Amino acid sequence: MPLILALDTSSEWCGVALLHDDEVLAAMSVARAAGFAGHSEHVLAMVAEVLQRAGRPLADVAAIAFGAGPGAFTGLRVACAVTQGLALGLGCPVVPVDCLAAMALECAVKAGEPSSEVLIVQDARMGEVYVGRYRFDGRALAFVEAPFLIGAAALVAQCSGDKADILGGSALLVAPALAALARSTTATDHPDAAFIGRLGAIGLAQGDAVAAKDAAPIYVRDRVALTIDERVRGVRLPA
Image 1 (cartoon, rainbow, N blue to C red):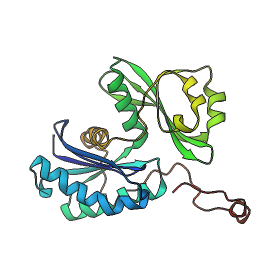
Image 2: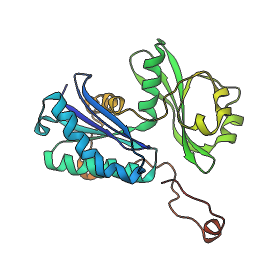
Image 3: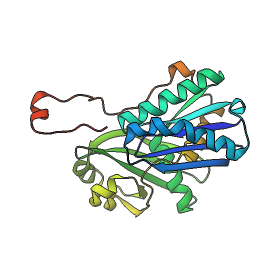
Image 4: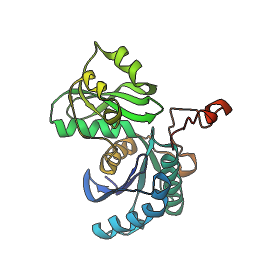
């Protein structure tokens, strides 16, 4: 397998990893108090550091995987823009990775179950959650339901009789009732760049890579502006 650089800035965590043959050569993950926009100030320095730790030059990178979403709008744009800039300079392909799938893979691997259904519920703010449901068979991860956006209360009502095996995601911190949707929960609350890289390697092998110019975030939520009434009421969109 080629050398893959992986980036994720979809949450308050900024993560970078370098992988070869499914082995993580180096990784960093840091929470930034400055907020999502602050990731742009640090991610390139983190890229340089993981390359130095692994003893590999940037020129060796054959593909770049990035957390494409869903997640914080600003964070997704940072990862996409940095990935595009690096990939254009290297002339290498880009693999957009579903952030919720990366979290599901991490949950399944940590749980150590040979086969499991994983539900990821990531906080989308405004009382809503990004949801993804996946099946892990011990080797590969597959979609049961692609990421979508829904109110936390509505999700509990919709899935109350359909429990997953494992539940993870930051929405558990703001909507504890979601824990009833699975047999067990994990502390996984943000995408890990190492798992972004693992799914990136799979995507590259399956022909899912795109040219740098064609890379784009996966927003899921389409609203990026408020009405006048919402502004008056103090409603806030995600960052």
